[in-house]
Length: 135
Image (cartoon, rainbow, N blue to C red):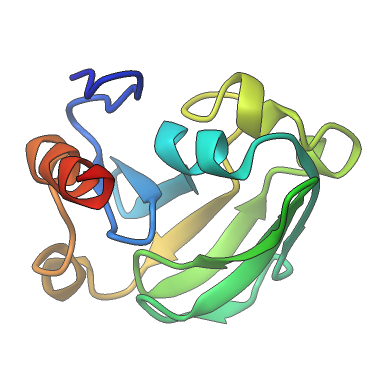
């Protein structure tokens, strides 16, 4: 679902802070949206909590640094980080090049997704959110 120049894939969940979530069983793959990476511009560094760290919905789990600024990354779900995308250490630009595939940040083992889901946006709701931000 394109909103102007931003890719917003259907079938994912989104936060107002511009993270996306893909569900795979009881695990969630998390990344930054196309909107976020375009706002940040050239991403040069990614720092995410280590594998095994507990995360809570909407609390900080790391940061990304671009040539323009440093931005916090918030966990869209509650659980435990089961995998970190280590490719981003050497190639943080993957967040710019392929935010929904190679640029994923972490995999989280979910603990309470039914409650978390109530606070997330669909692709259509996220697209509406971006339109409001750009007005």
